[in-house]
Length: 300
Image (cartoon, rainbow, N blue to C red; front, top):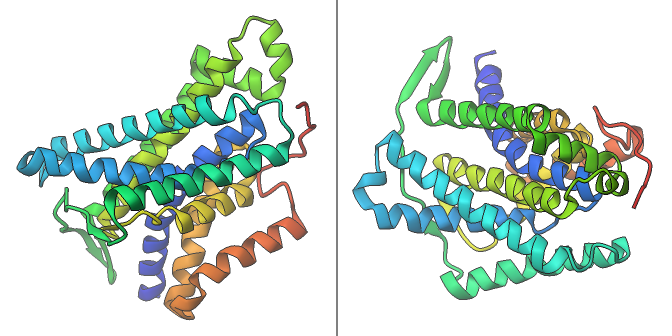
């Protein structure tokens, strides 16, 4: 039982990071009906921004909550700016193109970012600095929780709640919901659709940038292709929860993280990637709209 509870805690921590990345997928899909396969590489770019920012700040970023927060905010800003550039340069000119064209463009952007990062930073893994030194904050009933794990869950929860506040209690959030429901009608009612779509990309990309700072607390290694697997798994999490549904993305991320950690703990680590795609296949067969999703009429 102790081992199960420890694995459950580890799964929730890992799933919290998946949830942050999955939110970017689900927001963009909710607005554009587009699967942004470059989103995982925006996460990778955020990790490199954080890495070089921490290096530039030096001791100011190490062991200080304020320094770690500054690194995270800069990483979120860098990822958000990259997300804006991708939408403005690549996706906006192709918005009226067939869906297949957008899908191919997304894959092309993903590959461009990966190999550009490899060219710029090299293919060797880099050790991410320890912004927050690890220490145990809970040790009860055989379950150990570190301060790093607590930070990952707390920050992910806070950002998820912040996103919900933006969507449901701000004018931009109302505009996002209007564009998601009917882009043409929203435009006729005076909503600046281009601005809303750009904001959605910036916001989703910024959340991926936050995940890029949180994940290295548990796995302090970054490299140009680090966004491939987390990106795919976060996409599966978004589909599992019901892509286009914010709470569904959060729930899907948590379930994905728990399932992955349980497989590693009770079966074998070689199955951790396989379980993700097994879940995707089952969801598509049994409930294609996901746990919290609902059928959507195509208005494109």
